[in-house]
Image (cartoon, rainbow, N blue to C red):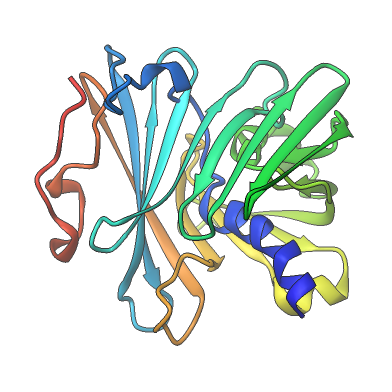
Length: 271
């Protein structure tokens, strides 16, 4: 199953850990010393991922969005050891973002460069780089463009709660056909978006993933598979709860007050 595992890893990385998108921190906002140099009001979302059974913190994700329309996403272990980062901008269709990412845990790098007609995928793994192009179809959702796609098509998705889409992870040459279902919950007030692989074989390894949005179109909770959980975990099923903040400038890491007690460390300002 090694070949299967290599195929599914980038998909799981994206769908389970990186679908929250929106305004993104541009790559040129990082100084040569690695600090965040952009100024102005910054919106933040912090996702605390817990094991679905034990509720132990598995990992933390920190999203920073700027008025420029760029975003940086950092992923950490519970002790704030970095796992991965992602930078996105949205030059065209919301579901086709421009992406730069690095997964420290897997030792991989990826880039996505969209144009009007094509989407160029670049990936580096074990010192070997590959590049390919895909047609820029409206039905194709690229990586973290899932969240932007949901927000941009909110009304039509509620009117037509079941549809077929294709998904591709950053750097991948393979797309997967998915079924997207939408369900409004009158009790919680949240709208549930579930994505399920169309192939029964894929569903054996990657069952449905569920995303819960509030009426303001903010992602509040994710339930499903993640490959960011610690090796000693009994399950790779997680629940990620998101909270939202705003600061006068970007941060190098989320403040202690935004984190669970066991993860709290002094925050570093990018100013």
